[in-house]
Image (tube, rainbow, N blue to C red):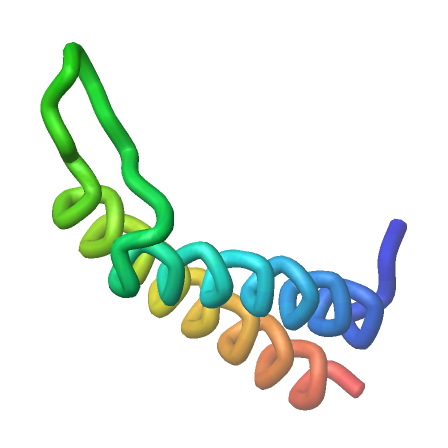
Length: 69
């Protein structure tokens, strides 16, 4: 099982990857298509929402661990 610090480190790495992809979506160098329709705007909104939600989960988990310790 991973420690909270390891989970946070892993999430920071994954979040940086997602942010890079978001920048590419917003810059127009990366597109998401479904049935030949560009769905990049929707993908950007979804990714931003999910990153923010996971950030909240990580912070809540860290706060809970700090209380227990």
